[in-house]
Length: 326
Figure 1 (tube, rainbow, N blue to C red):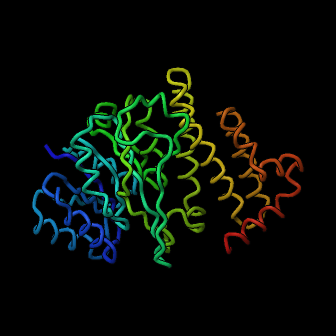
Figure 2 (tube, rainbow, N blue to C red):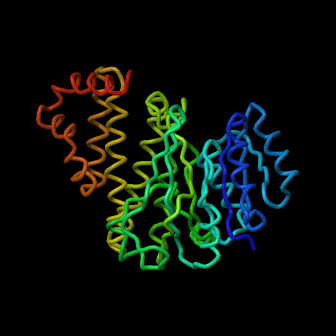
Figure 3 (cartoon, rainbow, N blue to C red):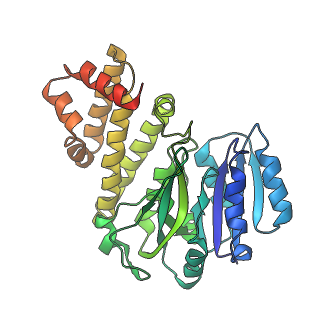
């Protein structure tokens, strides 16, 4: 049995995917991992590059091709094919760093439902690297998730789940963008134990033109973000009675992404239609999740919009667009 299955979502990544695959191929534990590259209908040479690595590293790197269906679908496909004890995502424009081997060695020792590790933000334009150290967890100890969850704030780049947990509970993501948050949170109601290793593993590339979190992409895909957000609302509402500590962990992220959606809706040129969309979103959030609304209401922008009855909308909109360079 492999120790780790890695799902790599790849779409038109011929310029960057070699760095991704080389980082796995360099591991001393190479034969104990499987890298499942899900080519999501690429139009460039991505599949050919992956195929050459598959031939060079049989049983380690595997190409799985599918018609274009969106990033979330690639994770679902990766989970379907995963055979490792643990499962994680690594996007094709990212890679793993110097702590990877120590991390895999730890995966061989632990039996926690979720394993957390540090990550590094790597600026594609400046070359600057900014380590992100996880707080709120004892190092190399397996602890109850309920005991630590309310104090945790994690990202997709930090987490690894037991493959059996994902499969047994039928974890499935939406097909589109912004499903990293679903991958992070959907398994959480089923996580009983968590362990942390203080080593940087995931190298997360930022400032790359065309990334899904860039303002133009957020505008194009605002409906996908909205669908994702309200799927987390549903998750929170279903969890708050049975596991309040885990629900508190989910709520932190829910409030954060509710602010992100407001920012996207303010990034459009001011108009009657865009204003209506913003206030409709706020109404739906308040009705669907009063707890998230309470946190959302604490944002300065939310307070300004509510206090002025929307009169400041054009000003706030122009200010936000200026900050984004739009």
